[in-house]
Amino acid sequence: MDRFKELIKIIKEAGKIIEVGYKEQVTIDKKSATELVTKYDKEVEIFLISKISKLYSDFEIVGEESFCGTSLPKKAIFIDPIDGTTNFVHKIPHLAISVGIWDSGKPIEAIVYNPILNELYTAQENSGSFLNGERIYVTNENKLQNSIIATGFPYVKHEMGKEYHFVIDTITKLLPKIRDIRRLGAAAIDLCYLAEGKVNGFYEVNLQPWDVAAGILIVTEAGGKISGIRGADYALENQILVASNGKIHNLLLDNLGEFDGA
Ligand code: IPD
Image 1 (cartoon, rainbow, N blue to C red):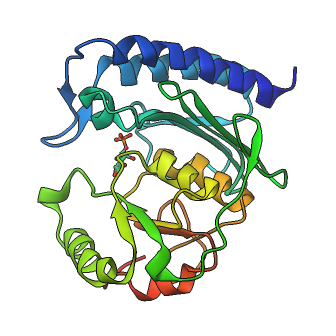
Image 2: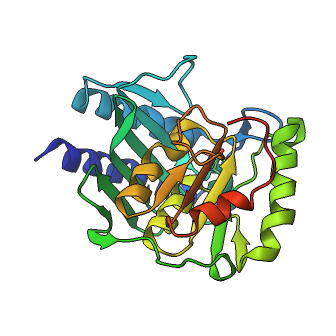
């Protein structure tokens, strides 16, 4: 079995841990006043790291619950054990394991798996994106007024300054121009929904590398576009990520709020 197929098998096994937790009343721990974590986030991450570090021994692992470095390795596996922890706690089935593999600063393989809805999104560089084995594509929509745009609101919003203003400014500016906004609660899945054609665009401030490392490749391999707020290439260190089907990208960029930063 090739390494990517083996990785999918490991992630599906990890999904079974989430399925158990989803049926329980889970105890909530807090990373900060507004950021939730559960024993399942930690357990899934430990399980994934123990298996993946053997399979991809030539890569460094950057996991949401354990990474404490200051700079990102160029050859890395980014793991979000449960993207959408708040949904997990509230029994909203919009959550996923997200695993993105990057080499020389670009994504080469990606898996986003929602074990509750049994949705497996995969992509490999230059080979397309798939949902449960079926090829997926972004939409051809070229008008903002026909577009659904997904976004998220950072959980540390109370402590934010310019980021909070960006969130509010953008809603004020963008909402009247589009069909609607969706805040679904898991950035990895928002990107997959864009890749699949359910939404036409996505933007968010203060995402972390593990939230988006997989979704970025799934979007681009489905024909979509990813950039920073000024339209230049997105780097995992950027504060704002903008994603779209490509057709509405410039219109979306033009209608985001002001932001003093990248
Ligand atoms: C969160 C989700 C959410 C986004 C937050 C992220 P987590 O990830 O992706 O959609 O709005 O900014 O932190 O904490 O559930 O892994």
